[in-house]
Length: 177
Ligand SMILES: [Zn+2]
Image 1 (tube, rainbow, N blue to C red):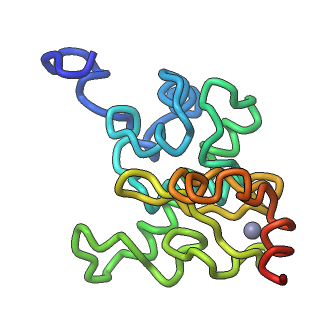
Image 2: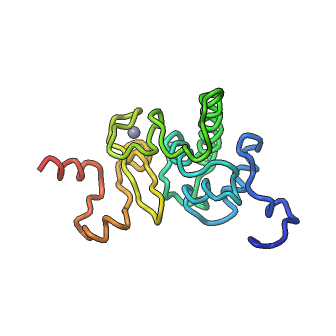
C-alpha cells in the first residue's frame, strides 16, 4: 500500500499512540508481521515514537525488541500499550519548557536503556545490552526483557560465531575469566 496516493487512513501515516484506543493500537501493531522494535519505529504504523522511545517503551513493557508482533499475547499487547502511553506522556511532561531541538533525542542521561550500553539497568542493575542494525542500535536489558537471554548481534555473532554467549550469566562468566 505504500506509495499509493494518500486516500485511505492507512496511507496518511501511523496512528497517534496517545490518542488511540487499545484496540486501534493493537490493530496497528499486528497489521504486519514485524519485530516489535521495527513496528514501533515504523511511521506508517505509529506516529512519533522513533528509535530512542521505542527502546524505553520496550524496557518498560518488559518485552524483547525482537518479539514478533503477530505472536504477542493479549497481556503483552496491554503491557505495550500502557508502556507506550506512559513513556511518551512522561517525556512530554519532562521536556515541557526545555530547549529540546529536533534531532537531539539520541541520548538523554535519564533514559533507562537507550544509549546506555554497558551501564546498569535502573530497574535491576544488569548491564544494558545492544543489538546493532544497519545504522541504528537497539538497547535492552536482558534480565528485564528477554529472560536473561542475549539477542544475537549480527556484527558480533559473525565474528564470534558459536562463541557468542547466549545468556547474561554466560557473558558475565566470560568477563570474569
Ligand atoms: Zn533490568
